[in-house]
Length: 497
Image (cartoon, rainbow, N blue to C red; front, top):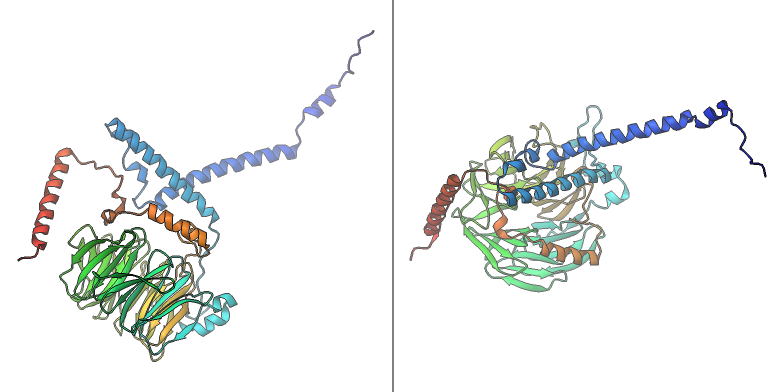
C-alpha cells in the first residue's frame, strides 16, 4: 500500500495563515495599555489613600522603618501591624469606587443669594419624598423642647421641659411611645440604638425602653443639665447643676468616673466624635476637655469674655465652634487650640450643631443660620436662614445621613431641609438606616464585643500600637514625673476632714 502524503502548501497560503488580523493586534495593545494604566492608577490611589486615611502628615509608613528596630520580636510585630495597616488603606481606597452618591447644595444664579431662599420655596422645588421631611409639630403647652436622633438617623426622640417625652420614626411618622412624666425634663438622649433612651429629669436621670417602660434609675446622676452618650464605649456622660461630670457604663451599670469641675454650674456640653473627649463650657468663659481616666481637665481654654452658651465639634475632630454671652461666635482649631475665625451675632447664639459634611447650624433667638465652609474661610453671608416667629430656639441637631436639621423650640419641634448637610454614602456595618430587627440585634452584640475601655479615651487615640523612640533614660524620667504629678493631684483632690 502506497504512503499517502498531504498536499504541499504554498508559501503564500502559509503566510496568510500565520498573519494576525490588525483588529485583533490592536485589541491586544489596547488591553495591555489599559492594564498598565490601571496598575499606575492603583499605585497613585494607594499613595493618596495612605495620606487621606491617616492623620499623620506625609506617608505614615515612613515614620519608622522596621530595620530601625533592634529587637527581633518587636520588629516582627511591627511588620505585621504595618501589613494590616496597608491592607486597610487599600480597602478603604478601593471602596470609594462604590460610593456613587454625591452631596448636592443649593446654587444661586446671577445676583441671587442662597440665604434668601425660604423653606417654602425649597419645598416647592424638591421631590415629594423630600417635601415630607419638612414638618412642624405644634406643642405649645410643653415646650421648650430638646431632641436627639439615633446614629442611623431613623428615629427621633423629643423631650419637653414640662415633662412630655415621645419617640417615633420621623420618616414614616409612626409613633413608638409617648410619656407625660409630670416633672421637669432637662435633656434627652438615645443610648446605643433605638431600644433605650435616657431622660434627665428634675432630680434623677432615668433610662426607658422603646415602649416607655422605666428600666433603670441613675441615682448618682442628680440634677443633670446635659447628657451625652459615647457609642463605642457604652458610656453615658452627664454634667450636673453642681458642676460634677459623671460617666455611667450602660452595659455593666457601674459608675466609671466622677469628676468635680470646680467651675460652677455648666449648661454647655458636647463630645468629640473622633476621640470621645467631653467638652464643657463654663460661666467664666472657659472650655475644658475631659477624659474619664483623669481627675483634672486635659485642656483648659479661655474662649470668651462671658459665659459659654454652646459648643459643637466637627466629625473629624479638627475644629470646635463656641458661642458666648459676649456675642461672639468663634471657630477653634483643636489641634493647636487657637482661634481660626470669629463672627459677631446680634443676639448671643444659644445653640450650635455641625453636620456630617461640615455645615454649621447656629440658633439665636427665633433665627437659625446655616453656614457653609465656615471652617475653611471666613464667610460674609450664611448659606441658609430660617425664622421661627414668636418662638425661641432651644435645641439644634442635624440628622445623620439626611439633609435635615431638627429644631427644638418653645412651641414644639420643626424639621428644616438643608441640602448638602448629610453624608450621602453610609456604611451598613457602622449605621444602617434600613436595618432589620435581626441586623439590629447582631449589631448590638458586635458593638458589645468591640467595646472600648474608658481608659483608652485620650486626646490622641492613635497612641495605641505606637513605638516610643525615646531612650530608656528619658522614658524613666517621664514616668517619674508623671507619677509625681498624679500623686500630687490625687492628694489635692482628697476631701479635707
